[in-house]
Length: 398
Image (cartoon, rainbow, N blue to C red; front, side):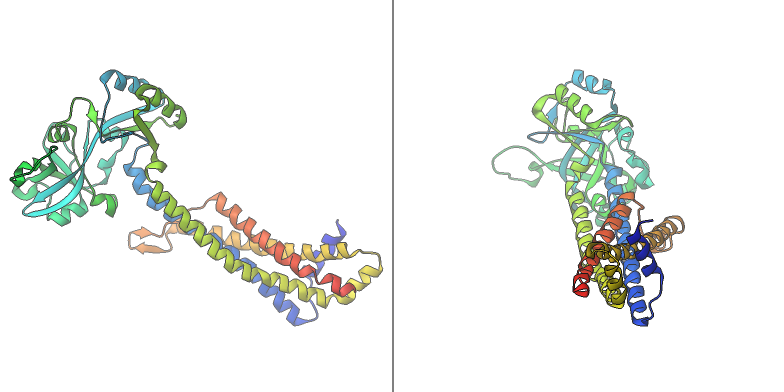
């Protein structure tokens, strides 16, 4: 057994005759334990919140979305659509028409985005699972599914209570407008369902059949706003992107789910980093108790240190003893804190110990990278504090 390690382990495990030294060492160990526990639980909580927030966009956004590089629409002939359908990595795709519209019902108005979908859309994004009432739109009927927030704003329920929802979009053109009716193209549709995904989407989108927006916007055949694509489970995203570019040319841009929600991901990652840095600053203060404990241990063991030095131990070797003692203290405290943190997260995942609402447990996620980050942070800070404390050795030996 390594001599320095043997002595360090004995110093850590053996109580000092001075009770103040023992108390300081216990406080340092509790600080490491609590720091590791707190940092791991906070990072696991933020990981859960990130997954919870992203889950809503994952329910709505496709694996890949083909958008026009300029303008609002693209025209893709049927031959190219068949080529896309034949790609090995593509499981399904849907043509989408999106446009900003004005909704009107019973003298109430609200802006929204119309999202007109073809019959393949539910194979790409099964958003019909988010319906909280009614049924999905029929592909050949003037029907619409609205978000729960839009339903509240317009006091509009399923079936329209004997009336239809008016959907208006500005007409293209120039010159003065003499009547309001000349400014908008208008179509009416019956509300057949209400969906709920999240508050932002619930107030933003309405779903209609593909032909509805095609007629409302007077688009050409195979002219649409975007292609939404679902990939096969084992498909290589970059390969599919290259194949799509070779078929469609440079007139389109292709975004994955993260790129479609880049602001959300940046915000969540920034918040996670900010919380990590704040807790790291707290840990720095807490873990310098380890350095203080090592200084006190050195002062308590001055006679032993001089004896070891006279017996031939070098200053470097003696310093290594106390460096190992601090490292062991940090390792044990950090490991115990991490173990308890993992148990708490597993209990929350299994038994929903903490609830946000009566039906919504606080989201957490157990991730290996969080375990590694916490362990690495604790060890680096603990060893650094210990090393600073061991500089006292040279003063003892002089």
